[in-house]
Length: 143
Image 1 (tube, helix red, strand yellow):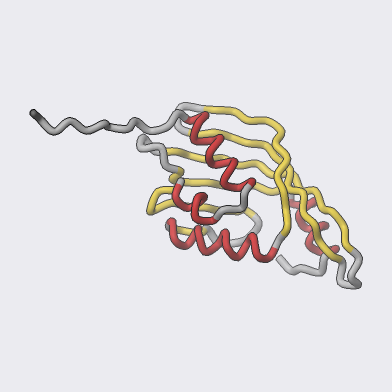
Image 2 (cartoon, rainbow, N blue to C red):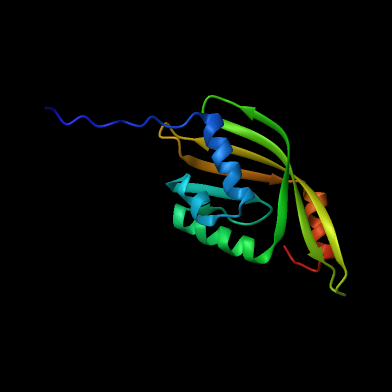
């Protein structure tokens, strides 16, 4: 009898988005990285350099989650043939230099490109510059 193996097809874009969003909601660097290609590019357009490669992304997420307490509020989600665009708001718990806590809200836009294997090959995160600068300046964080 021939060796018959089940060939798994890549997840639909919608299914991949749901899993990807859940990985960010659960703050799981291993799961986030596993959904990216080996040569992925992750770039937050806030003046920082892009993160290149799956393991570098995993390490970046570990540091991000250790440094910041934030959640995501979804707004609008649009799908294309090989990508999605998500408008969302970062809701971050920050502290002023004097110790007073506050909640910052920064509007964000993700543009995520996916390959035929169902892996994220690039994620660009665009931030509302004014809201971003005001929040981090109020917290005394240089960006």
